[in-house]
Image (cartoon, rainbow, N blue to C red; front, side, top):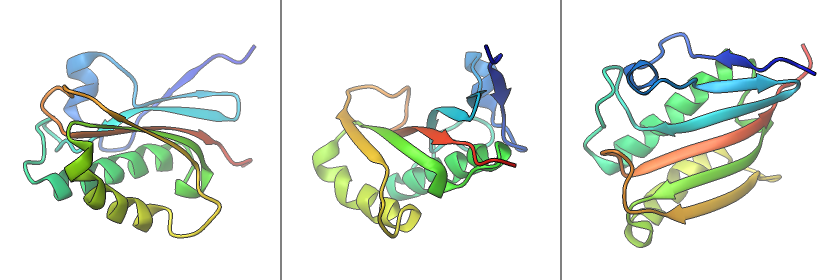
Length: 131
């Protein structure tokens, strides 16, 4: 059995240390990325919602890059939203930049009432390309 390996981006942010979790876990050829939020390097939330979503995607991209992956390697996405009805247009705009053409990954969106001071979170599973 393959031993899971933690993966962290080069500029890992404070939330990993504050809350004791890995940015991602590599297990065989799969990468399980923890929920990424629009946090600044100090762990604080980006105050503007659109900027928070863009930063969450940028944080996700940094974790993927640390494992040798890109958005094209993502097979499954789960997003969490504190106000899905009003937030969805902004999220879809950023999503279309990250995933501009088919085939698109699986996507599950969940409305939640708490994200520890954030309004959007994205977690993914990606297949790590052969090196």
